[in-house]
View (tube, rainbow, N blue to C red):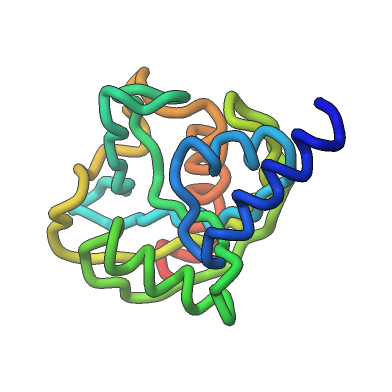
Length: 166
């Protein structure tokens, strides 16, 4: 890509407001840069089982069609704090009442989309979600994103060590 092309792309990108990035552009930015993600692992106690809320991606998702995942969001340029991302998750993906939120660490992952710094949280929830389904953590479905399987395992270990409270 020559300097003229680079200048043309940069000129077009200046037309976008900071915040939500249209998907085709977002996917290319994700390929070229390291993103910051907030990942929630919503857990609840249901009788003697610990369950996790998983959400199904759309069948036309370019990276993980029809796969299950934990709720998460990418920090946006117009977020003024982590709270903005938490609010977006509670409103757009979690759709059930959070009882507690606990930060359990972060790590750098490489997946189909690119590199992401993942900030990991356990969310203790109750009730029913309208955005996904709860699954027994000891019988997770095959179509779960691999990095989320690891995240759930880590979260359940922490949750159990805390007496299933946060």
